[in-house]
Length: 76
Ligand SMILES: [Zn+2]
Image 1 (tube, protein in one colour):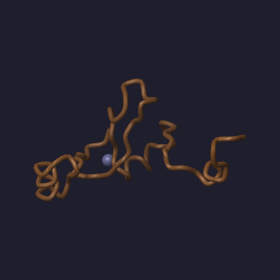
Image 2 (spheres, protein in one colour):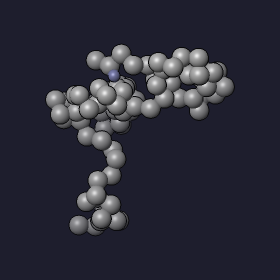
Image 3 (cartoon, helix red, strand yellow):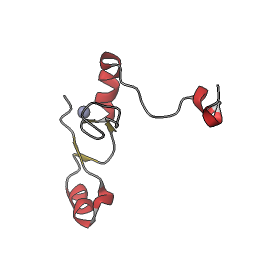
Image 4 (cartoon, protein in one colour):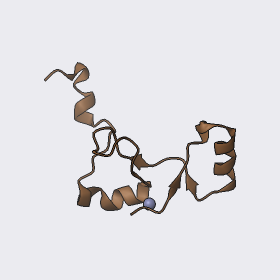
């Protein structure tokens, strides 16, 4: 699916160095969460792929929506 490579530059100086030396390595993207059958972070896609496939695979972003933030505390 997504051919982008990801690495967290906060993972140590070696990781930070690697990201600096490889501009094609992304440090942000969309990953699966613990609700995914194979676990959190099993699959990663870049933002462009997320946009392209979100509808097809019915992906949902964790980013809070306006309606969620309008109901703090999770009360109905
Ligand atoms: Zn991608």
